[in-house]
Length: 170
Image (cartoon, rainbow, N blue to C red; front, side, top):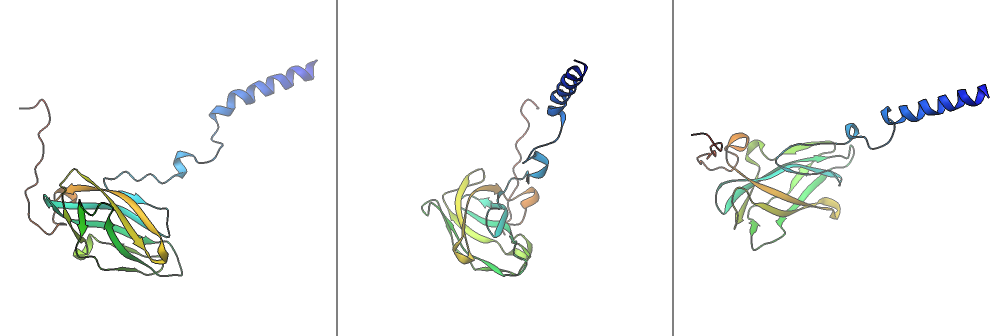
């Protein structure tokens, strides 16, 4: 009888402690969590990170993103960029982006962004497709952001940054 009681107490203690343990898979601390205004995709051999269209005026903007080649041995390339709805937006000056193995290219540096024109403005979201070498493609919901704050000057235009006043303050 004494053995059964000890076994019951041990089982009860283990049952109570189980929810407190950190056992399991796919814990939140093991997942990538990018909190940013731009669109991100890490599903292909090339990561597309922080994709935005910076717009200083209605109907025009500059596509900005970072591309990361995850292969440590093979080069890659971004071979195309297009809007999923050509009536709302068109990329007018795309040129391929070559990526060395295990490298990053940030379009925000050295004015490497691509001009986008169409029926959009800051606050809109443009469905876009990034074509990668090897036939892979990445579909993104790319936000259109104003040409101010951290994106100031990335559209190549000078524009006033309009900041909304907080509600309730005079």
